[in-house]
Amino acid sequence: MKVRTLLVVAVVLAVFGGMATVNITLAQQNRGSTSRATQNTLQLTELEEQNILYMREEEKLARDVYLVMYDLWGANIFANISDSEQRHMDAIKNLITRYDLTDPVVDKIGEFTNPDLKELYDDLIEAGEVSLDEALKVGVAIEELDIADLAQALTETDKRNIERVFQNLLNGSNNHLDAFNACLDGDCICSLGI
Image 1 (cartoon, rainbow, N blue to C red):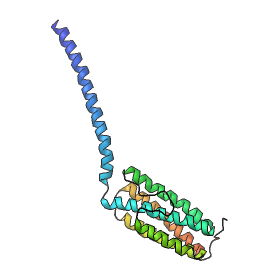
Image 2: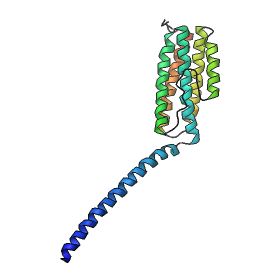
Image 3: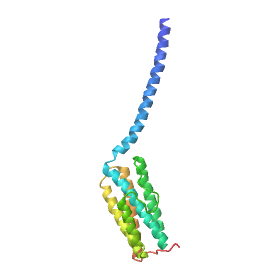
Image 4: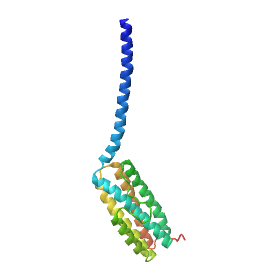
């Protein structure tokens, strides 16, 4: 009888002990996933967070200006590069999601959370309304600003995923700058899409 009772107790303890282990393991996994999300945010320095959020809106600035310039002048370069700027915005949005940040983008052309970018947008639109050449110069100015800001942001992070995104955007901005300069130099056909 004693052996049988001991076996039943051992089985009961094993079952409940196993359940306790399972519950502890599940609790640790849940706590781990929560802490990973928190850790993602905590991993960023304040400067990295600021750069990600700023670059998201700066890429929107480029996209929005180019969309307006395309509507105004019908030059395909603006349509093509605005599509690329949307992809740049999407790449930064992935970082925002990855690090659980609040997206600053207002989904309306010409609206910005950052008042400095709103003011710059207004100035660039006014300059680009003068002529197609001036609109192309606005494109050059935007890409030069983008290049400078991305190069600076790259020096302020050591996270490979952020470096990869910013470097890809930097490469794209250099290509855009070359395209705008080529059009200004008459080395490309700035075809009208109207």
